[in-house]
Image 1 (cartoon, rainbow, N blue to C red):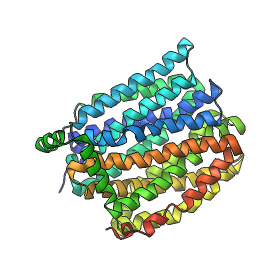
Image 2 (cartoon, helix red, strand yellow):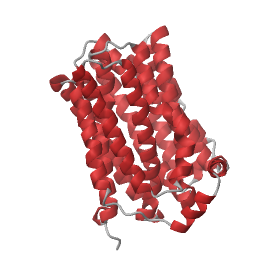
Image 3 (cartoon, rainbow, N blue to C red):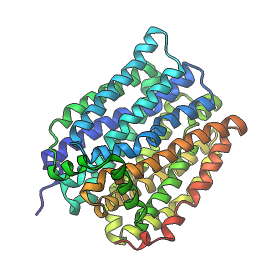
Image 4 (cartoon, rainbow, N blue to C red):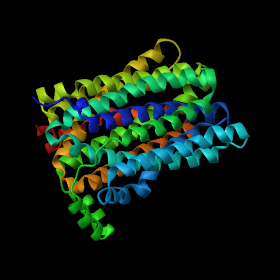
Length: 405
């Protein structure tokens, strides 16, 4: 009988580091746009740009980051990313206390934190198969994604209350401290993998390494289908969520904790989906599970644009739960599938290429949300996102991915 994953010191330390970091990140997910709206008077366009910049960095650094992660030891990269993000976020409360905080400052923070998150995530996802073995990837990712979703709930709920009680700058400070704590836990994570493979990778030109990763991803129809459906979902989610601080707090007049509670419902849905993904995948197979769950849940997005005062708010929140349940299932099953079919020496590059396009879609969605909000109003962004989400299961149905065991 195999030892439980959390009894393995290496995986346990990685698990705790991810959990602590995610808790703080979700606080800033709520606190930064609320800080922009309530302290700096930001409008829809500025909030959309702020959301986009936190992910658009991936478009510039994504491919080189993946090749670099396949050349170097991954744990030091993760620790350095944590320390860098902590320093950048600490500048926000300092600037606020000093009276020189501006939207330009927040834009710079979004770019730098996005770069740190990219490096951390690429290294982390590439590290997991070596820590647990490919046969236990679904169980490991279920724990990691489920805990991340739990931190979504705790972090976003806490953020709404913390911003209302102590102010957004102190909420951002909490995120900075969480990265320091994460870096401390990562010191106990071992570094599996072949030194010889990395020495060969270092001798190979960076451009050739990057090209090999891109060719591998686009040469596999299963990975391409996972990429297309993920890109559609990642484009739709920011369209449905980026302007919620403007709609819920500014236009509908709800207190900040309501926004935190609404977003926390999404964390609860992702937690439920990730917790049940292993069972669903084992019963239906990875392919059938991903497209059937997507088909059953995606139409719930059509309720999101009706978000308003009274029961419509919580009806939209229920739809948000359903959509994020699907995300929890897909994150566990499809990330595990990607790790299973990718050789160790290509994991960093495959992950970075996938992340480049997936997170690029998130950035584009944030920009599009801001543009639509400025031109036609907040609800136009919600409608656009809902329509894209409603058909995002089609790429899986039309590909070999739906037959994957």
